[in-house]
Length: 289
Ligand code: HXC
Ligand code: NAP
Image (cartoon, protein in one colour):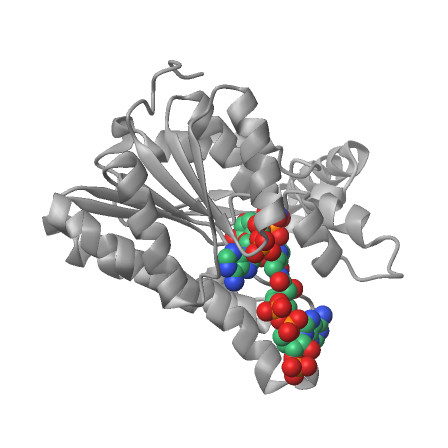
């Protein structure tokens, strides 16, 4: 889909780049020529991922750390500049989440998710943004999800935090456009990963996954390469005029939930035909009268 040198000479920091969707997007950026910096709290996970990437000839630096700690983020920014000389782009991907009835959440539970998702994104954006302002160039992409604007029961801290990330994205797109820094977000629907599935699939509710899939108009979950392609496009200079946008990649899931008549997609063809016949007859009767 892309030229192999699409992201050549770009240095991209990917938070949460050691696992799941962050790892997939990072690998694709690397295959397209980018220098990668991957961060996360577990050093051994980062090292394993970096080894895999290096074996494919990808340049990668690991920066173990916690996005909630500003000193870790500052160190990541410094180490990136020391190794690669500059930071072209940031992918705010690190997140924390779990399902819980909201009335059962402790203060600390709510704070844990807000601190990772909203404060972590702010920490990375502010520290790296200042470097980008100095360089008069930058690209900041954040991973949100569709309930950033619809909200969702049972993941209230995550919904509130992702809504905040989206508001930050749109606000800074305008404020820092003058520094030639652009901000966008991707809102994925469900993409199976160990991190998400282990925390969001209610144990003992065996039909949940199938029900979830059936709600999606395309009747399937997202595939990693589909997200990788979108993220690579948004990281590339080919999308340089896209600023302040959120792009949904969910097979039509959230719109299906919002549309008044979405349940009618379950009607068999035969019922539509029978209804059409009936309508014709009723129209004829009306005209005779
Ligand atoms: C209720 C919970 C809980 C749960 C933790 N807590 N899990 N409360 N239900 N299932 C509470 C703890 O009891 C504690 O409160 C507080 O949260 C902090 O927990 P810790 O384990 O001390 O926090 P920490 O080690 O910082 O871990 C953060 C985490 C964890 C968010 C709780 O799950 C994590 O590290 N997640 C990172 C990866 C991740 O979540 N990936 C999935 C992203 S998927 P007390 O009061 O006891 O101290 C995603 C998909 C969105 O975002 C869209 C899908 C369609
Ligand atoms: P994941 O594998 O659990 O990814 C989360 C990553 O964030 C991990 O690598 C984790 O590494 C890192 N992380 C968590 N807390 C951190 C912290 N405090 N500091 C630094 N790094 C931290 O789950 P995923 O499904 O790939 O999720 C990736 C992104 O996609 C998230 O933003 C998520 O909200 C979003 N998303 C996912 C889906 C889906 O269906 N999978 C749908 C919509 C949106 P450590 O644990 O080592 O720190």
